[in-house]
Length: 294
Image (cartoon, rainbow, N blue to C red; front, top):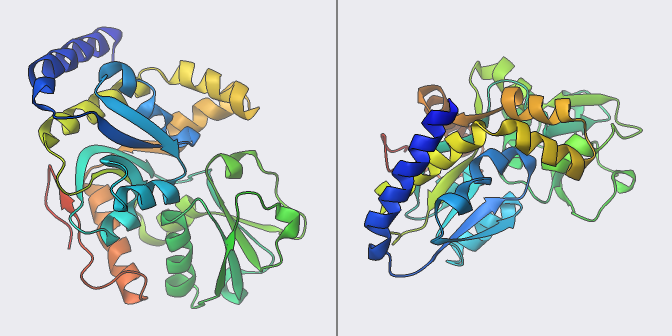
């Protein structure tokens, strides 16, 4: 997207809010993922729409807050969107990976068909479910599951495998005693030939003006993708990673548009999650723009 296109979109979205914000009865509470992978979706959002209060947290907590009604719209794990009652996906902006995710890493002491226990990152719901689906469906194992807490160190882990997500996965070195490393985005792609969808913009029941939010989140995403250099520069200072590593992660590893392949991938994931008792057979999801799932 060119600078002129970005400027034009910003003009359009401001006109949209001048025309429609008077119909909003209150400020909208929005939940944004606090990891680097969400920054292209969020970096310009507050500037584009002052009718938002953005709360940042890990994906698992955002899902809990949306379910409790503490948030109106949030970027939540796709599995929690499927599990929720009356949720609607309000944007084609998403967090996905075409191949390697780089920030969803399973370390293992053993080949995966011999794993009997796994510690799952406490910030994760979608990647945790992906781990369980992959192990059960592809490797035929259903290990004992425990949580790897936010304050825990890798040296404390006693399980056969441990899942790390987000910035912790990107900044952690391969732990001693875990010689095997699996990027779960790569594992899903090799197995299914689909990209993997980690998170979606989801509205709770009762949120109005979905057409406005649909347009806003897409434009905010496009602004973010046009500004990856600045986002990567800031992230490199914050995470103590190189600019090149942050830029490559945002521009090549992560993918931010929900299309047909992403829909088909999510449908397949849903089927496996139901098969293995992780989701109920009734799990479904409405899309503001596009066919419902389930």
